[in-house]
Length: 578
Ligand code: ARG
Image (cartoon, rainbow, N blue to C red; front, side, top):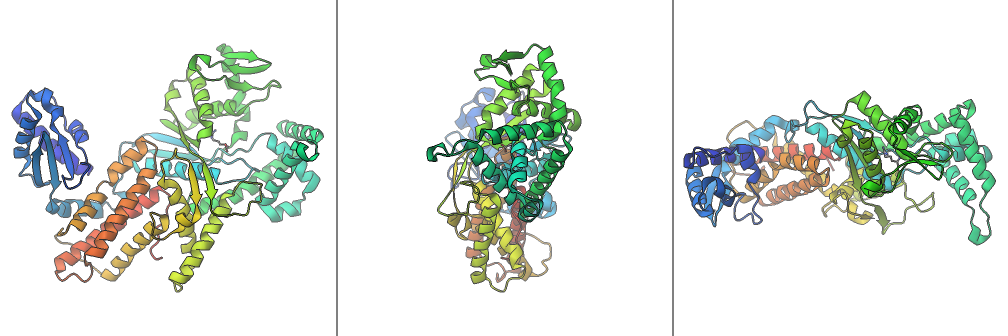
């Protein structure tokens, strides 16, 4: 639609100049004024002429009438009407067939891509689980929104650098080391992997907290020991360092299994530990700039002027904190990756944290403070389905995926027992169902996860759109070779489908502008709905007229391309057969 809008806008500008040669107007601005009418019966696009009243010193009704005349003969225009100062435009079916479809087929996997990011670099910090703590459904958001944003930016030409900022440092490692020595063993951890680590972590945490209500006191000694072990780790104690490294490795292996299911890779796994020696310089800079205040022994940056609580930089014992590390990491990333934009995807609970340290970066005089972007998202809860929770009340991501895959396998066993690569397809659809369900909502919305809904093959779900994709593949497989030729659009279903497809580029732009992958998910649903209406109401392979048959096959191919490109943007696998 970008191309169509641009073309219509150019025509409008020409017509306006006919009326008033002095008018200051460019096609880009006019293109941005074109609207989608709320009722598609009115037209595909509408142009509100009152916006030109001032420039042309005429009434919107007069302007609409002149523009209507000037545009009527253009080949883009199917029909055009001036109504109450609006121009209502229907795009010509001939144009849709002769231009849009060849454009999609020609650009293929580049269709919908943009160039506005070319020459710019974005670093994206996402997923970033805390090692030894459970990788749970709360991390689904950062992982899939983060990766979708990465794909979207790449599609717009940006050079992207994905960072998994592992939570691989902090007192939890003191606790884990103590728990491991007390209750664990090398064999047990080797066998149990991350589950064993989480179990040890939960056990030591519970012991430290105690259960005062039931007469079990908090274990202060264990807490002290944990702190001491972390301190030793910080001081470079070899034995503790070796254990720490091993724990991180085991956790990463596990995360990578989940990332692989999602098709996600990172460019860097530099976690919090990496920035330990990069913090002192920033703390010193804060001190030199007189930005650090001592408050009850702790060092803080006062943000009262900005209506925020103070940003904590150093604890009373001099140890650093989460914001300290984020500041040091941002400086490092700017210096080493030279980003034009740094995006952080975390739950909305961290909004204040990001607002605070972004402000501190600004106060420190770093000119790139406004290149930092926090992208928050709402909470996820789980309903309707009891999942085994090894870890108290949190649901692990891998268990969620495993359950979805298992259920899909069951469904497929009934639907299509002879399918090849059943396991592979079940994984693609099970994982896809969760991703798609999650990304259907605006990111800030709190989501209540209902597995039944996510896995349904006939709702607005992942399985449904993957099934639709497979349907396009199956039509194309049966179609055989089709010669290039004129593409005829003869029905409303076809026209609607083409018009839906050609809005892809705009959806990509909007999704990037608002950091909102759900625009793509909903676009996919629009395409799937339009394709299925076409599929059910128009005969494709059995069409009598060979030109109609060939046109419909090409339209199916264009749909496959657009769906596939959109799937790629949201980590949804392209299933050729379901
Ligand atoms: N590890 C953190 C957590 O799980 C998220 C880190 C987000 N990234 C950042 N640069 N602070 O809550």
